[in-house]
Image (cartoon, rainbow, N blue to C red; front, side):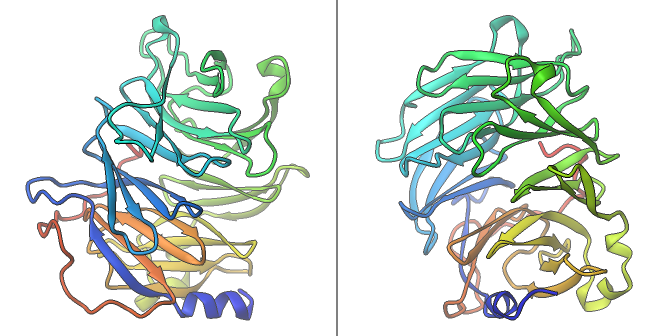
Length: 362
């Protein structure tokens, strides 16, 4: 069970801020990804309408907008060592680096793949020391190759790529938070791979291949353990050092203790709070459930309601606050501060009915 301090922390969460991603009533913006930089109090969010908005993390006040990609944006990530640097990836075959102190009209740098490879970037991450950028690609329809591409962030040149580890679109790329050469990837082929990118070849680099038996939605690190959420709402936790299964939940939505008021419709992501792993799930009417997965059966630690009105796509824990983004185009901030009055948020008022998630995140 969750220890008393963490349980108290979750129980004290209130909906303290809420804002619409778009101020234009004609646009329906699914929020697809979010990133937070605590040192600059900045939150970056990207939507299904090809642009990035910057907010103050503490109160969700607007700070800026980036319209620098011509294709769907597939990820945003703040640098780990520089508080004002933001990266974004897109289906327009570029990864761009932005300095959020500027007018945001031009990127600081642009990273591209091999011209002949026609790579579409579906996910990316930056190593913990910000030296290496890695992007996963959709399968090349002509060659059927699936590439993982690497760039030296300082020199901007393409370092090379891996092409043998996955057989279908790469959906997740995730560096270890403290080990600069440790990288994990997930794909619609069901495989989750762990690499030591300090090795000279792909064959030498691949440390571990794990099978989730379904298309991978989210992966993340918890110490040496690696978790995985699939598109059919199964959950896996592996010890990557001992190379063993720690937890497999294939029927979580059917658990007897997760029915009625605690029912869930889908899984969202893992959540590490005070060095303890939790799982966030949701309902199609916008409720969030924080689950403790440390016992024999997952249990609801807290339910968060009143923020979203449809499916939640992403969430992130930072500075003892939870931020969530959904298909209703809303960003919600949950903290221990006083709850906001129950009223419609400023901005877009038109809410589009939730749709069933596809087997691919984009």
